[in-house]
Length: 218
Length: 218
Image 1: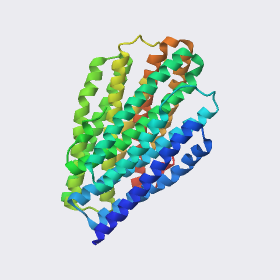
Image 2: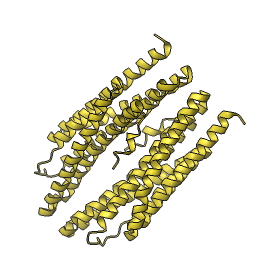
Image 3: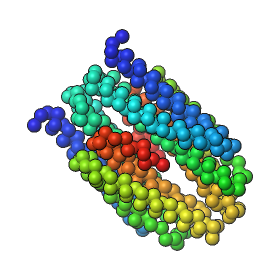
Image 4: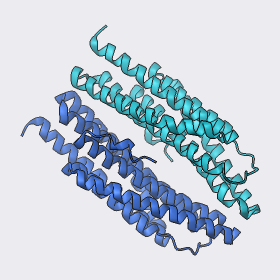
């Protein structure tokens, strides 16, 4: 195996590892929201630094490979995609942190009795993270396309929670503060999905040379 | 002048041009929010495609320089920073579009009589875009640091509009729908500032080799 190939495989292992961390943080978010589990919220907050350090290390690795092997054509584009995926994963980690902080704030308030699909939204997000990384590793446009489809589903659930929360607020003024916090969580989940969508679009762009990135934006 | 230097200068000109477009979109947002100017809102929406195309073209340019000149050390890191700045600028453009869409939706509703500092927030955002690009061009850490300071100011104004809007909703149920739209605009402005902050942190990281990126996150 060529040195470059060996380094690219090692780089892939690391991005898969980072993806796994972000997926785990996303799954913790679901539990954390459902049960106001502050131990889990703290675990998400504690995990942020590791994710950040990992992002910095992966970026350094990319720069090292570029400087050492001076790859061209597909290998060069692949490394650039890894750099962008790396950045998006770290930003997803930030969204998990935002959710953990919001749940921590909510734990002190009266519980809002409202039927929101946060568990489904969170589970879609987790799958989107996992499948976007799978699409990268397998260089598989079909899997990437599934991530885009999941994002549509996520957006629909986000719109629904928005409407539900608006109605809850209208019916009972005392719900305004916690309802806005729930809106923020819904926003964070939707943003998490958008970041996974960015990754999927990068894979499709890399594979098909097509600029899907800007067709689906909203 | 070496070929590489010439290409790097040309690349810099293009990122400055893209920065200018995003700054203009941000400034249009301020007018658009203040006066519910739907012509301006439409201009922001119409400008999105040009910003997106410019981002794709700059990324291609970066890949071409990497493949052709195989730069190392500072030049390599500089190109990677340009790639990330390019990505952040495009995402700022998306935030301007989100604001334009929200203002368009608000134009059909009853006006919310509330004192929000959106003009100041928007003007801080515009300055942050402009100065973050200036920091890149001059490779100036002091200017980059000023962008970080402006972000603190922006965050404080965002918190204030959050509280103001919560109170408005509590006092008058009929304001809930437009107030939530105003909250979203405040969020979009805050996200715009965060993206400029990312750029500033990249410059500091590049210049000082320091990982400020992860110290200031929230």
